[in-house]
Length: 147
Figure 1 (cartoon, rainbow, N blue to C red):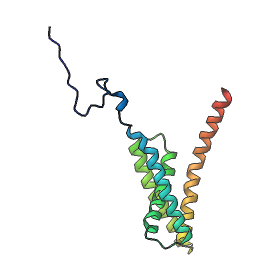
Figure 2 (figure 1 turned 90 degrees about the vertical axis):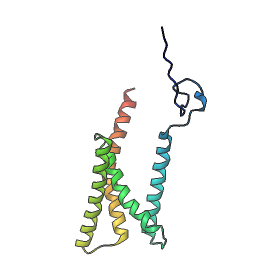
Figure 3 (figure 1 turned 180 degrees about the horizontal axis):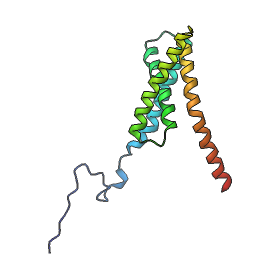
Figure 4 (figure 1 turned 45 degrees about the vertical axis):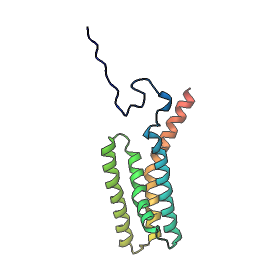
């Protein structure tokens, strides 16, 4: 009778062979909250720079990031039932549509301004995200009440 031995890969972290479990690296999922916090900070700084009308070389890219990320995040959180790729495609295209509709509406009404555009996009994004957050809080309260 012959036994077959399986050799561990050189990149083995110890999880497959059971050795060195205490030295296993942290999963990549730990970076997700850090990246989300950085994105919120960059978007917030961009909105603040646009609203204060401060002259800075970071104003344009940070404000553009806010104008794309705020509606995309709001639409993405509202569409939890879709697959991640589908949700991403819909969120990005929806963010572009929101920005184009805000710009077109403000130009048609002759009230175009950078501050007004940032405020309008922020308001529309919060209107999209608030009903979903309210439902989640209501469900959480109902579960807590039933316990």
